[in-house]
Length: 298
Length: 243
Image 1 (tube, rainbow over the protein chains, first blue to last red):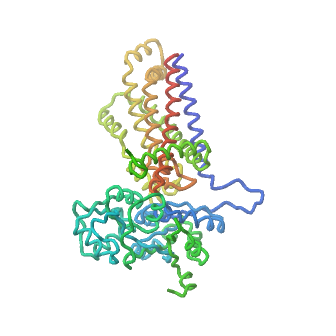
Image 2: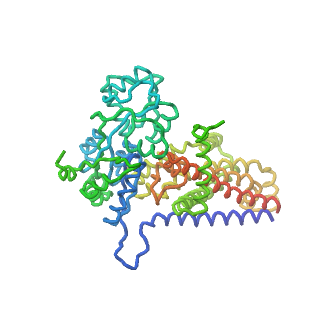
Image 3: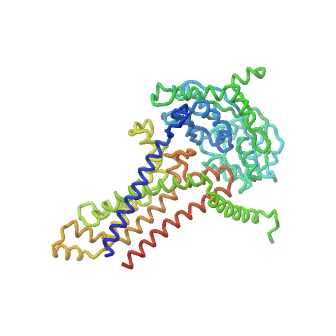
């Protein structure tokens, strides 16, 4: 009776799995929680935030978002990708609001009508990190372009993100400032996120450009790469928030997206951002209009 | 000898830390981990059920019919068995994107989108393996059954039953490819915490964050889950063989 048993087993399997499918589909509706007796909690609205990996990997979003979710009775779905992909998601109307760091491309995004407006949020800075042995001898240099030139001249291994992220854009800008077209055995384009590239650099004893937030967060979990060059104004890394334009994509939650932009630039949230620390180090410096106005407009 | 701060020793410690962390996460029934595990299983079983529902009948039919251009189709199916998941993810993203043809469904960044991508990845596997195992059944069987008065449906069912071990292998392969897949689900699911994060995408995130022990612990949980599922299937197969 093997045959019948096989059919029975197969049918049971299909039934169980299909039940699981249905359960999975129901899962999508979980956004509507069971009505609570207090009845004040209406269905939370859903906001899709496309952002860079640095804001999620550093832990900043986990730290600040609960405040927004509570105030606006919203669920913020964070899609953490490279700046290039985040802007593409916004451009396709697949996200309601973007929080990224690549100033020129953000301005183009708004100019092309995909975003309603860009607001300053905060900044951190890029730093040049590398092996403790520092074969190119760049430790303590204050000019990023000069340090890049030394790396190229000594043929020391440099790992580029190579993924069109905000960090990659910045790196290309520094090479341009140095008047160098980086190519050769020493220049590796990884095409991966900041976390992966820091790991690769450590393993290969290479230099790389990192945003401070990801670097400090990784240092807390044992990264041994050293911090070599900082402070050059070209290394300034501003983050902007842009609500996606509902005229291009009527489906986006424009109202909540604007509320998010207003919230993240408000003085209160800016103070929250300033208080966010990893390993005793502040990672982001608030820089919204409201913050600057309150702090003497520096 | 490995001294305390020897790098290789540190890696060994990471592995031990990971084992300890995995055990702790499982024993303490860490709610976040249980949730991600459960979601992985949901996506995998849903996608596998749909792949089986499409793939087994299709594979059986393709094994039993003859038509011109069949070899070309076979080659296409075998190619499909090795579809690069990221490409599948990208295509599903473009189709489900707001700008895409099925954007109005609003499936992007949901479990549904992940299941769709996984079905596309796993179905060719199920079709291909079912097809070759049904083909391996002695064609004389069907002829004899028909001669004995079985309807075409009965004869086909008999051939499929004869090929059941091969079909189970196809399902096992499909299960393995789905539960371990990361590129496509990352793209179309978005790795959203509490909504579309599954074991594989959580592993990528923790790796990116440098929490190698947690990442490895999740990997151990994934393997354990996969092992238990396969064990159940193998035991089921054994039962079938006995009877």
